[in-house]
Length: 97
Image (cartoon, rainbow, N blue to C red; front, side, top):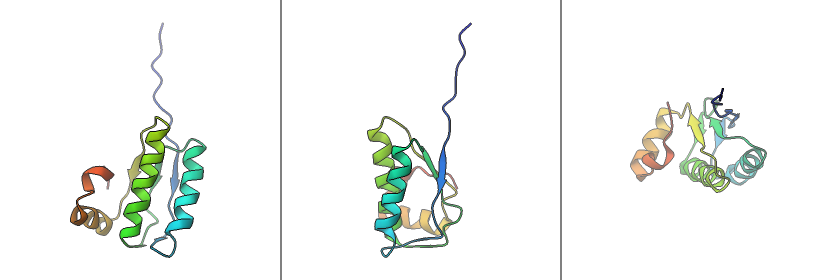
């Protein structure tokens, strides 16, 4: 009998702040986690952000896709979702609120 295995979801949490000042460090930390097999990020802790957060999220998505994995973004703050919409990248982010 063949068993269908669902993919294991391994998410990491982003920090409370993801702004221009912290983007480089956040990007590097997330890329390390993705290289180690993470396939999603939980943005619930995120309270302070700017457009740099969108660039980091998109870079994490691209890194996961380069590994052949999907990347799930969950609990995106409403303000960041609005910013993504304003910049026209909301469809690229594909986040769940």
